[in-house]
Length: 152
Image 1: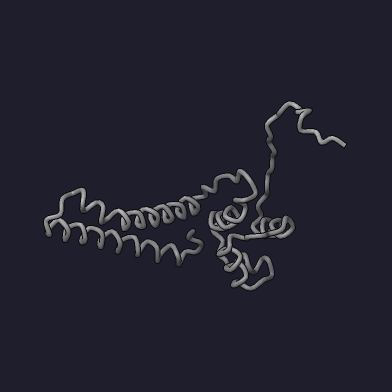
Image 2 (image 1 turned 135 degrees about the vertical axis):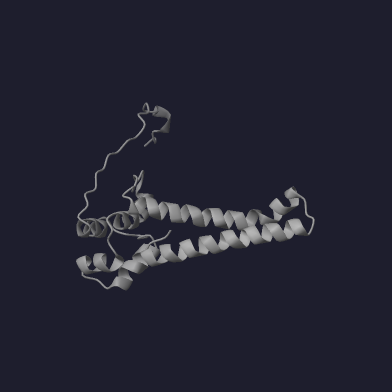
């Protein structure tokens, strides 16, 4: 996941360089007489990496445009906090200042996607970004199963 403007700029440069390298490699293989299927087999891993990088760049651009999305369970909360900061146009340093911590602490937390974050800490981060969390719970309604009941 791209987390900073600097990472975004570097990813865009890599994307352009990878595309050029891929095109050159394709031309070289074709010049060596390989058929289209063979060329594709050779290039598939490189194209897969290129596609993944392009998806990360596009995801960052969507966040910068305010398209944060939704979290469907708490497992996605860390990524959502990172995405929310990006969508708000807030730097890691600005968030760190609002939290009263060093920028490296925010960078580390985001790199780990806030793994193991407590509810209280998540609330502090959301407050620092002046964001509200809306929750709802859904669960399938299942009939009570008498056979599952433990006998005492």
